[in-house]
Length: 243
Image (cartoon, rainbow, N blue to C red):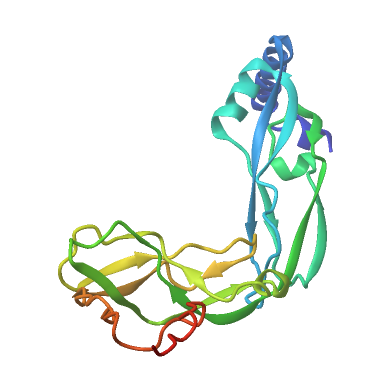
């Protein structure tokens, strides 16, 4: 045992001296305390599930340690990884622990806010709904839009059952028809309905806007005074007596 300890004793002594010097250097530095924003990265969401509500984006972590180490931590950044592989529908609570942050020795966590957060998963539902147009502006004088159709005419929207209940169609973003004299084709962006879990299977559809000249308007014929019966409320007066 003694031989093992004394083997290459000079190198071991040198290594000990270097480690001691580094420790004294770190301990001797000014202490710093700072708050760092740590992003929360979510991975592994099962294919048949989805996030029922927007998850927490980041947590606040209060750190204490040597100034140089704190600066290094801030420059390199940290993340809190959340792997949802194998999780089922429902609420799942996660905690941010110091060992999750891969901090260097000499830096410690004073406070995490929030220390716990919840991620809610729900079953993925889907339905097909028709696309409805939103137009802005007016065609050229004497013209009018007679029809707007889409390719495809329906799109698939996914989300939780609760968010999908009130979705019966999807509106386009406003399509400008100002000054049109002929049919027009364009890409029409789609507006996502309200609902935190809702997602569309495509961001746009092809719109075909059909424009035609306005049909001339003929005024309705006005009957002459001699035509038709007298109005019921017009009293013709007593009959004339013979002379």
